[in-house]
Amino acid sequence: MVRVKEGSRPPWVGLGAAVWVEIAAGCAYTFPLYSHALKSALKLNQQQLTLLGVANDVGENFGLLPGVLCNRLAPWISLLIGAACSLVGFGAVWLAVSQVVPSMPYWLVWFALCVATNSSAWLGTAALVTNMRNFPFSRGTVAGILKGYIGLSAAVFTELYTGVLNHSSTKLLLFMTLGIPAICLLVMYFVRPCTPSLEDDSSEKGHFIFVQIMSVLLGLFLLTSTVLDDVLGLKRSITYLLSGFMILLILAPFAIPIKMTLYPVNKKRSDEDLPSQEESLLVPTESEANPTDPEIDDTSEDVDILLAEGEGAVQINKKKRKPRRGEDFNFRQALVKADFWLLFMVYFLGVGSGVTVLNNLAQIGIAAGVDDTTILLSVFSFCNFVGRLGGGGVSEYFVRTKMLPRPVLMTATQIIMVITYLLFASGFNGTLYASMALLGVCYGTQFSVMIPTASELFGLKHFGKIFNFMSLGNPLGAFLFSSILAGYVYDAEAAKQNPGYGINSSSATCLGPNCFRITFFVLAGLCALGTILSVILTVRIKPVYQMLYAGGSFRMSQSLGH
Image (cartoon, rainbow, N blue to C red; front, top):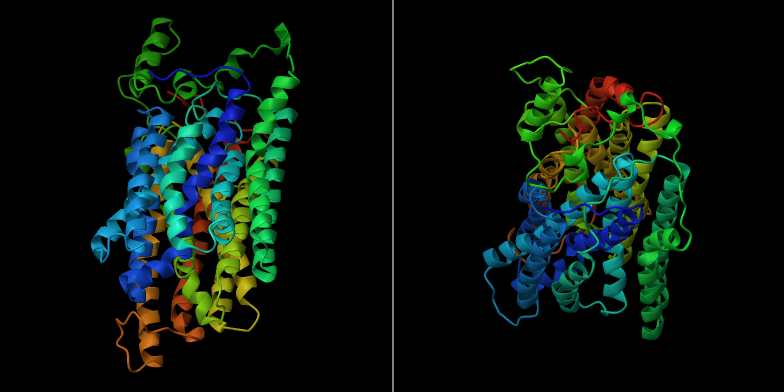
C-alpha cells in the first residue's frame, strides 16, 4: 500500500522533480545526434537506419506495461525500472558505437535501442500520471508543462552534446547510460502521490504561470546558446558556465515549494466555506487521492453502492450502469467507443507524420545543403516545446472560457502541417528552418492536447493504460511512414544519383528536394485526413465539454475515482 503525502507543498515538490524526470525521459529525441555514428559504425543504408529509428520510437512509446502497472506500483519503482532500461540499453548502444564490441549484430542493436528508449515510457508514465492526479483541476496545464519539458530535452541534450561533450556521440551515449539512472535515483522519493490540490485559485494559477515562464526562458536560452556556439565557436570555459546556468533554470520550479515554506499562507475556513452536500460529490474519493493503492480498484464501486443502499440512498440495481463520456472508463470499455478510435487516429496521423521528419532530420538537412544539423534540431526542439506548452495552456483557456473541445487545436495544427509538408516538398530556398519551426509547434501540440482530452473523455482512474495505448500511434507512424516510405524513397533516389551504388548501399548520399518529395506529399495527404477526422471528433464531444466546464471551471464526475 502506497501512502499519500499530505500538505500543500508536496505536489509542487513532485512537479519540480517530475521536470527532471521528463527531461531524462526525452532521451529518445537524441537519436539524430548519434544516428550518423550508428550508420558509420554498423555500415548501414538509410532504410536500415530508419528501422533503428523505428526501434527508438517503439521503445519510447511502448508504454502499455507501465500504464497497466502505474495503478499497482509506487512511482519510485517505475522510475527504477526506467533507470535500469537506460543503463542496459544505452550501455549496449555505446558498446556498439565506440567499437568496444566490434561488429555487434544489427538485431541486437535494434533490441538495445528498444530497451534504452523504453525508459522514456516508464519515466514519463510515472511523472505524468502522478502529477495529473495531484493537480486534477489543471490537467491541461500540467500536461502542457511536463510534455513541454520533455520536448525541450532534445535541446538540453544538444547543449551538452555541442558544449561539454564536444560533439562526441560516444560520450553522449555514455552520459545517458549513467546520467539518466543517476537522475532517477536523486528524485524518485519526491515523485509520489499527494493529497490532490483541490484549489482552483489565483495562487495556484500564479505558480503555474511561473513554471511556464521559467520553461520558456529555458527554451530561449538553449536556442540562443546553441546558435552562438555554432556561429562563434565558444570557449570550453564559457560552455561550462552556460551549462551551469541551464541547470539552474531547470531547478527553477523548486522555487515554489521553497517560497511556500518561507512565506506560508494560513487559510481559515469558516462554516460558510464548507462544501455543501452537492459540492462534496465533486471531491475525489479515496481511490483518486491514492491511485496507486492496489487494494482500491474496481471493487470500490460495489462497496460504495452497498453502503448507499444500506442508508436508503439508492435502490438495489443488480446491473451496473455503463459509464458515460466524462466518467471513469476501464480500458476495455474505452476500446469500444468511437471517440477513442477517432482520437487515436487523429493523434496517429499527426505525430506519425511528424516523427517521420524527426527521424530523418539529419538526412533532410544534408539533402537541403545543411552540413551541421544541430541548429536544425534545436529549432525543432524549441518549437516542439512551444507547441506542447502552448497547446496545454491555450486549450485550457478555451475550454474554461468558451467550453471549446481541445481537439479544435489538433484540427488547426494539422491544417498548418499540410501547408508545412508542401513547403518541404517544394524545396524553396530559405524555407527549411521556417518549415521546421512550424512543424515543431504543430507536432508538439498533438501531445499536449491528446493527453487531457483522453483523461476528460475516459477519466483518470485507468488513464495510464489509455494514454499509453494512444502513444502507440507514434511508433506505428514511424514504422509505416519513416521506415517503409521515407527510407525506401531516399535510398531509391540516392541510387539514381549514384549509379555506381545499389539501392541498399550504405555509402550513397542523396542531395536535393527529390530525396523526400514523394514522402512529404504523402504526409500532407495524411494530415488532410487527420483534419477531417478531428473535425468529426470535435463535433461529437462538444456536449461533453459543455457538461464538464459549465460555469467556467472543471466539474469532476461523481464517478471519478470509484
